[in-house]
Amino acid sequence: MLTKEKKAAYDKIHRQAIRDKTIIQSSNYYQEHREELLARERVYKKTEKGKSVRQRAQLNLRCKKVGITIDHYNALPKKCSFVRCTATTPGGRGDWHLDHDHKTGKFRGLLCSKHNTQLGTYEKVKEDAEEYLSTR
Image (tube, rainbow, N blue to C red):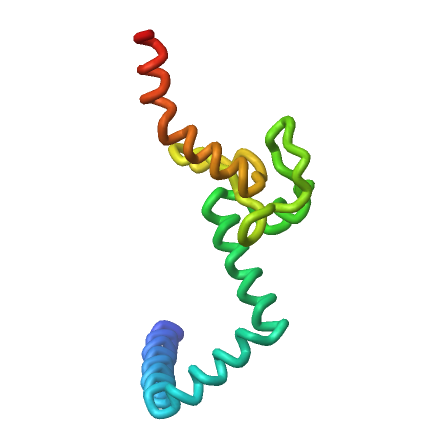
């Protein structure tokens, strides 16, 4: 009769062998049916469900990058965080921009396309501009 430790060790080896076999089978299947699978994926990506799944995955990655959850994002009012901005649509291509401090990664708010571009430009030239203005 097997002891608990021997049975656990056997089970672990057996599970790993099954995992390895499954990976090999999956890889072989993909190699044999690659073109068919890729064609099916292209068609799926054009469906409403495929687009929705892709957008959600992209939003999830964008939220993770700035340290917020999708629920937090969905709870935010969909308007630009700039004080005098009245934009209620993101403008430009895509969705609202998730503004964050590039040094700390801290999320600061949603920005429309126009203000995201302006802020990005400002942050790049800020030090040069301050140095120039201090010498005048």
